[in-house]
Image 1 (tube, rainbow, N blue to C red):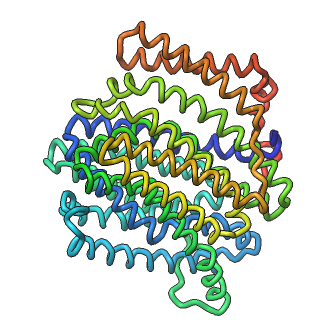
Image 2 (image 1 turned 135 degrees about the horizontal axis):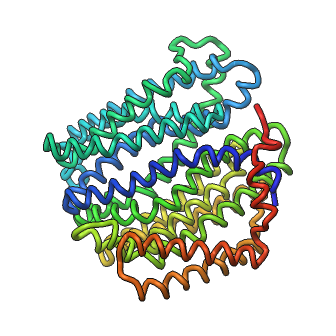
Image 3 (image 1 turned 45 degrees about the vertical axis):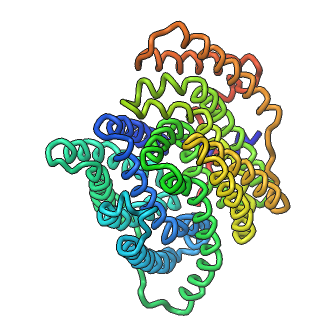
Length: 493
């Protein structure tokens, strides 16, 4: 389903792959390095600071990214890019000012139960936030302009340089865990200045009447998106601060290790999809209408299941050997949360496709309400589970809230865009993934644990999975040949 319509997405997705694969590998290596140099407490301090920067970003400017993706195609068609980026640039600088104010207030008056363990890192966190604002919005502009090659070059350069810089700061300059934050801030700034800045329009600090009308339209669409993203932030990151309050910083560190090692493969595919999908879907909605868009969304949903279901099974089955190979010292204990973290990540990926109709119909207030329901489930489940089950309970709570989110946004958006789940494909994919997981489970009991056997187990699972998909008729030889011609029929601006 959607074989032709998904070709444009597939072409862009392939170009985005290097820009997602290499940063994902570096992120796994980052956690491995952190567990080698630092205790669970120190990793917890880093995680809490990193999540605080994400809080500042989510509350101030990340909503602008979705706004750029949603509105840019219309203004590009009308050759009004300068006017559009003038308004976006003004909002970017306003976001920087708000973020700086929030960080200052947190440093001066933030309660110790939340900020006590990482207050000394808030200063470098603020620098990281400022650099990240320019970098991330610049990447979004590249996505909107459909420049996946330059996007991948930017993210790959950032990823390849930041970890060596951090290790240098750890070893030669005794920076401690703050060295990772300094390295991130430095590379965001350098890559933006070198590769991205010239592609980003200039801000307009005095707006004419047409720009003021655009500003009102952007805020009408974007502020509910900001609220939605804040709720999603609390669903995805709030459990760290609840762990800090109800358990300790060490539990935060172990949970961070579990999330980073297990989330990365699923998030890699999910984020690669989101990079390529929404600009193409928005273009299809504007130019070809609802029926074509439903076919496109159904087709990319099938691709998501094809790639992410086997990852969910493999990461659940092989959680313990993954941690034995990639983590060090006490961080190996975090493997017990692995299967639950993988399930939660998969469900969150599904919610992206489920809420597509609400985004396209600009029903962001309704999406905000559905996300609020999911957050309420998340908070209640965390308060019930964390005192008894620590970071494993946090993973269970996230599964519950993400499942509710998928069901709620799918039901709310059905009238605007039917989300066509490919049930027959899901059944075949599930059977193939289960068989691959069983093969890996059996084989791991007869092999020593090291990086080579771990790679061999993943290869075995992939071969079993791919072979069964061909046998079951889910992924045909014609589709394999068609992948060589993804560039055909690609929609253009």
